[in-house]
Amino acid sequence: MSKSVLSKLAKAILKQDIRIIDLTQTLQPSTPVIQLPPPMSPTKPFSSELISRYDEKGPAWYWNNIACGEHTGTHFDAPIHWITGRDLDDGATDTVNPQRFVAPACVIDVSKQCAKDERFLLTPKHILAWEKKHGKIPKGSWVLMRSDWSKRTDPAAFLNMHEDGPHVPGPNADAVRFLVEERDINGWGVEAVGTDAGQAFAFEPPFPAHALMHGSNKFGLASLCNLDQLPPTGALLIAAPLKIANGSGSPLRVLALIDDTQDD
Image 1: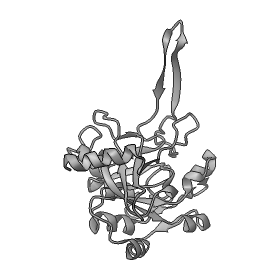
Image 2: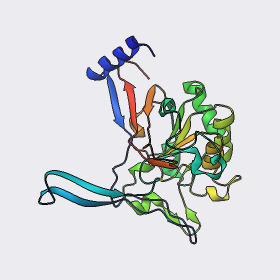
Image 3: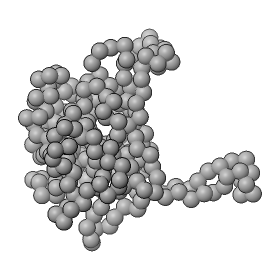
Image 4: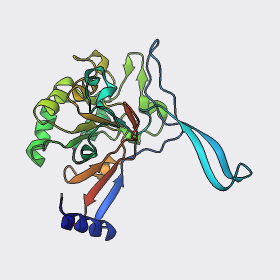
């Protein structure tokens, strides 16, 4: 990218011709985290402990100790998060090429289907129908599934656990395989607590948004919000995880840049 292009981008941001949408949920103790059955080890919820707040422990400053799992709240899944990506040299949060943290986004809106069916599955048929209207998904793009699931502000409704497991929408295995093999995307993002559908443990392969994406050195974004504010195409996503040594992922602030001078 030339200096002139960067200069134009900076000026457009200052003029607010480029709108910045925050796709990140607030981290707090009530933030839902994925639930795993015994004997699997669960992740700890987010917690915050006061160090000082303009008092005798620190008269001029306020700060906290925080603790959480790498996959808490709006978070990044690095390829080594899954066994299929464990041998990738550039698959950890500190070894991923940072060039890949900035990429265009395609938003597939299936919110109406998800409102009718909490176990809705995205298939290649849905993707091809979207492409017929908006064009072929470019190589190296983020593909985000808008379900409006993030509007479930009650943690129990967000996790939506039933006797047979979570009832949460997501992609089927064929959709993930299509995005990986036929479109060579950068990564896959959703509004739910994890990138797979709630019943994906029973798919072949199990948890394809993890197994197929990460095995192909692709990324995941989970617990996104405000996808209803994005156009189907044209947004630029900034999704940079913390640079944790050998990190399998991390909470992050996901930002979308939208050019308000252009039509969708």
